[in-house]
Amino acid sequence: MARFLEFFVASLLVAILGLAVGFSLPAHRSYTHSVETNRPLNVVFDMLNGFQRFNDWNRMQQIDPNVKFTLSGPASGVGAKLEYSSLNPRVGKGSWELIESIPGEEIVYRLENSALGTNKTMRFRFDRTGRSQRNVEIKQRYRVEYGMNLIGRYAGMYVASNVGDGIKASLRTLSNALAGVPRVDYTIYEHPLLVVDVPAQNVLKVDVEAPRKDDGVAISMTNQLEWMKKVMTDSGLEKDGPLRIVTIDFSTESYTFQMLQPVRAVGTEAGTSAAKTVAELPVLNITVNGDGNPVVLAQTPPMRAVNTKWVGPAAALQRVRDTLRAWAIVRGYALEGNGFDDYGVDIPEMLNPDAEFQAYLPLKAAEAP
Image 1 (spheres, rainbow, N blue to C red):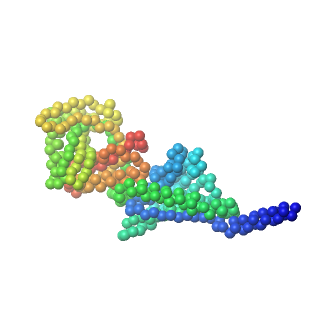
Image 2: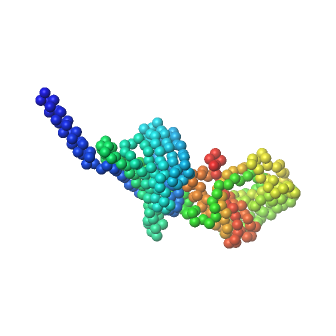
Image 3: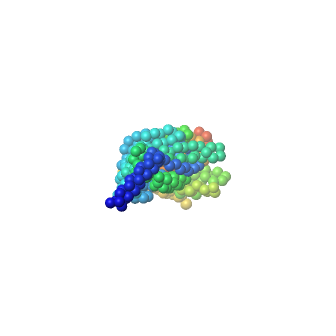
């Protein structure tokens, strides 16, 4: 009996000590980690202000490639919500909901999951840093409340490892994803950035590789355009849209590209070279005369593409395409194929400050919205 009393008293003392220690532990816990990037602040903010690139800043899919996601609410901003479900206990079931969004300053998500605690939030804070304040510090902070839940208070002792290690890994993943985005602030671009439908077309095509120095590009384009004009005259065709330049490779020494000129039979209605499918295109035949004439008849498939207008010299179109690329990547659009530009001016005018172009980057067909 004496031994039983000793055991009971010892157990009681341990329980009292456990309660005392538990109540002395914090009723809430937080963990913060940060990473720095040289990408523009607006690009960083857009990357995190929704779920379009969620798997590029969260490790759920890396842990379980079969995790199921369900999106609701707006595409970005307050109200955007992602629910997830996984058979992997490291992921489990729960949701992220965007509850605060202050452009250029911070984003706050409310978290629901099976981990102990309530009022869980994940906050992303953005601060300019580095030389001339050109870099951005991304500070990610997790916070959870345990209240009177003593088990939770004890569990909070391990937040730095249970949650903190995941935050560190996620920020590394985010940093790598941002490194793949062109260093362009598309929010200051003066023309709308859009997703558009581009129809299938009958075109005359020429492959070109031109030196970039001494007006080599303009001279080559002019020469090839003369071949195109000859084929149109000999084949009873006329232009059915602006000249299109498809960029293949743009190096310091040379420019490799394709010239595509949409065409239709003379006397037919404008736009007849465009169709929703290649099979719907009018049947055309061409006559290619002249030694070395490089012109061939081709058909471009229909596609969706990100698009914007550019007013200025053609030499800046590479930068414009980078602007489109950054805007598209941040929004989760999958790009595929070579960028191209429709020329709204004749070749001799393409370097003028008031020259107009339409720039395009094709979207991957299977993922085009």
